[in-house]
Length: 298
Image (tube, rainbow, N blue to C red; front, side, top):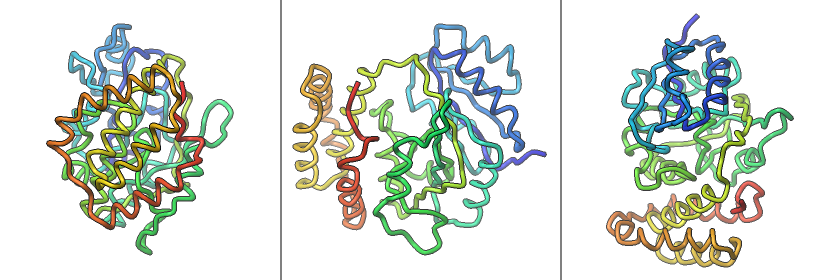
């Protein structure tokens, strides 16, 4: 039995074995959703392996590493009202995609639902789950779960209409915390986001990652987001706090330098959020201050 409401979008780069294992799991989902894989210029035979083992998967090979913007490319090729984002080391539990589509069908003001993330092989909750579950934001009574101010792309189903309306993921951020800007733009446009614990995503973190490079890009993107969307006083406060709390090492220095180099385009594109959204961002900033999921380490 198929459910044609949702397309699964997977971005990948040089993680052939992890991707193939994920595609095996996704192929077993009862909804049998269409799967689109964006291969970000892998050099390990990823594209050939996908074509051979999963001929039903739509493979997009842009020829360069688009990072998270590969998701934008995939969404343009999808023909469904909902998009489930997937990393090459995550997979949705059977039944979760249909349940997410049901919620989005039912609540027209809902842009995205973030599921519960279980870390494999232990099955424990990811530290970010507590942050989502205990979100300080207050949403409308009709929300099917706690209102949230951002989401984890690899554990989220989004409404394509909302995604397209705000332009998808920003091309400048490339990868690493890129969800924060998109989520804020959705909130500014009047959409709602929520966490739904009944939706489950499993994450078996790949060992093929450069944690230091990810930290540099993630911190740079946090600064860019702050300067792009927060009002002046809030932007200065958060920048100062980051400068005082991140590790004092070469990686942090490189992140700040990279962010400063982007300041000309940031100032050109700067668009502070409405007051109601800034109130939400301030509440989230306070709530995340001691969150174990928000440490710049690696």
